[in-house]
Image 1 (cartoon, rainbow, N blue to C red):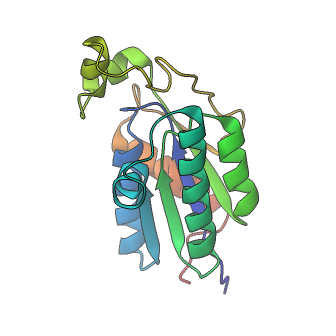
Image 2 (image 1 turned 90 degrees about the vertical axis):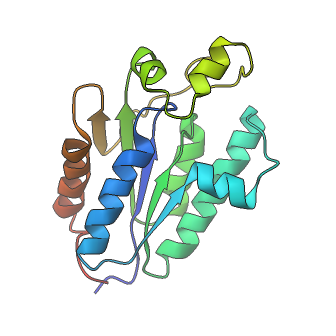
Image 3 (image 1 turned 135 degrees about the vertical axis):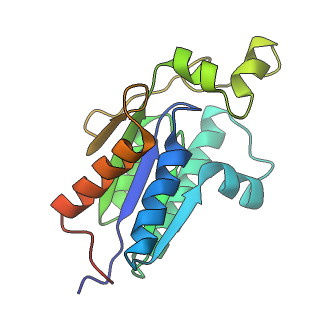
Amino acid sequence: MNARGIVIWFTGVPASGKSTIAAAVQKELSARGLAVENLDSDQVRANLSPNLGYTVEARDENTRRLAWMSQMLSKHGINVIVAAVSPLRSHRDRARQWCEQFVEVFVDCPTEVCQQRDPKGLYARAARGEVNDIAGLHMPYEAPNGAEVHCPTHRATVDECAQAVLDKLEEINCLHLL
């Protein structure tokens, strides 16, 4: 029995589908009886860091906090799902270094498709000039070089993407009861 949980880190530009796929994976892991916690960046930010902005430094701090929480939970046997833009590779690399078992999921979607989806109205606000700090639009987003799972959400369904994540977890023998 492995006492450590795995950290599944979803990264991608806003509205690419990170939270939606993360929720589907969480539902399936829970249904299998696994201990799982979903650290959605928007929820964590709203509850723990409401005054944290969206500068490069603030994004670094947000991903550092998510990585630390993930490390702490996973070392106690909780499987952790993180859904966060986490735009810079260095931020995600730090999370990978801190977490013993780590799977990066690149939720890949063209910005034009994300702008059409725009579930939170973020891109509409940008078009009106109200925000100018969207990763992948105004600020850099560095796509992963070697993500364990690639989910092209403009061509694959939520179920197909969630299954790809589950398949990877099965492949690396992480779908077991803790």
